[in-house]
Length: 95
Image (cartoon, rainbow, N blue to C red; front, top):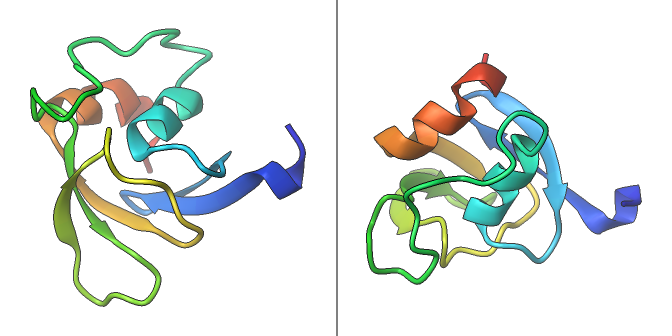
């Protein structure tokens, strides 16, 4: 994947380059793909709520609650809070 296919986001203070045009849940799966090939306990269809997180887009000062399976990633997004399931899967990548 080339640099032009990636955007930069921040999760819990750590910066990551993730695929452009994907939803945040898929981007987290991309970040942990070497250690965790498949994330568990997520419906990917906005029903279970296990992928809830707080996200602030570049132009926003305060984060809003959203579901990672429905939110497209944007350059400069800041994820400040993850639900317990997501926090578990990415904990080893956070600072």
